[in-house]
Amino acid sequence: MEFNDANFEAEVIKSDIPVLVDFWANWCGPCKMISPMIDRIEAAYAGKLKVGKMDVDANSASPSSLGVRSLPTLMLFKGGKMADQIIGMVSEVQLKKAIDKVIG
Image (cartoon, rainbow, N blue to C red; front, side):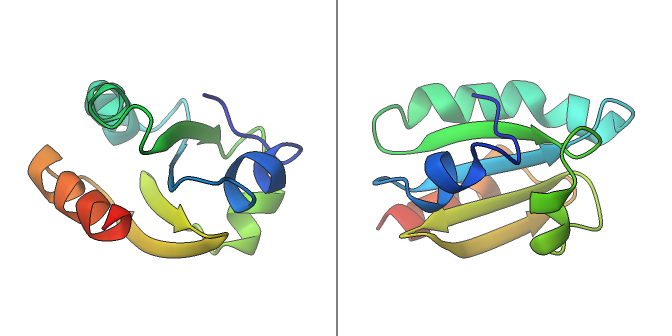
């Protein structure tokens, strides 16, 4: 799923299930490297976690208001609030641990 400044409130903040947002940019090498892992996470947590990406070059308001300064940045939201944040490269095991903690 693609998140943008226009749909962020409806798709992320008002989501009835936890949300993983992958803040990325086309020029970011590590962002491209974790993309397949994000796809696997989306499949593994289908129905329990909404997963989407936000291009920070095309959408500046949401990343700016959330303090995104480095890429890749992964944010987990639950109940409309940021529950966890992971900056930079991370293993799939570490990401799953963070997700499992938020999903409960």
